Length: 104
Image (cartoon, rainbow, N blue to C red):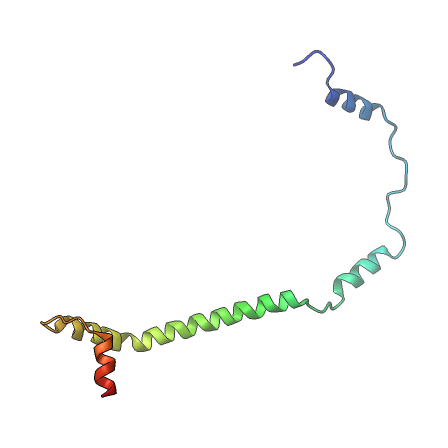
């Protein structure tokens, strides 16, 4: 260990030599009543707390709707994929030609 005095050791020595605190450390009268009354008081929630609660609920509902939508349409999507892969001739569709055919 170092033999010369460091600032830390000087502070520790000064703290040991300081007189003990003789002040009264008890809580004032009625402190427990005030603390319990504040703890049990009904506080109106803030806008951000309400927004967080309802946004998480909305996220859950959207997730359930998404799973429901995918599960209901999965069979038609699989049928469309199978019908596309079952055709022998692969033709590239021209969207402009389709529009012109639909218009005439």
